[in-house]
Amino acid sequence: MTRWVALLAAEGAEAYNKVRGIPGVSDGSAARDLPGSFGGRGATWDVTADRSPVALAAALGLPEPLDTVALTSVRSRYVPLPGPRVKRTLLLSVRPGTPTGPIERLEADLLAMPAHISTIRSWSLSRVDWSLTPSRWTHVWEQEYADIEGLTGEYLGHPFHWTCVDRWFDGEIPGAGIVDSQLSHTFRWSAEPVLVSPWKQPRAQ
Image (cartoon, helix red, strand yellow):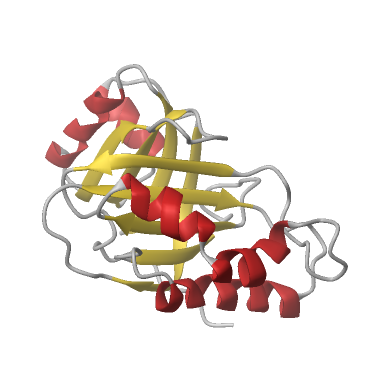
């Protein structure tokens, strides 16, 4: 099983929830992105399956996703949260040629965020598996929140975000601005947990 994130057109996104009835699929949900999202395509589809979202969409007779990434987990944590939740997805790309050291420090700073920002519930940091989905993205950083304000308020405005994490996204900071300025920051409502399914672990180095 592999966990995937796919970007969809907003119109008809709910139809992709039918994927749960297909053999070889352990979980899947799709919904329109909420206002304030940017860099997406209108809707986000999270699915854990033994084949790609492109193949699953074809089996459902639905349009092919507009962008698809396969995820290899770096680290994650599931935190119980009753009821609907906001699921946020950040697709980012580290600039080509970036040494391993700064990439590892970027990942460490992202992974430290839940210890500082109380509104983050379940979370996951993954690398994109280019062997399954050649992509312009390198990493996917995901979280769940009880409400929109948990993301747009405490998360985006937290001092740890601005002092420790934002520097990796600032190309004017020598040695730190390693993330390409083109991002996909989307968030949507989900009736159920998204970040609970098993997915591929990192290959041995």
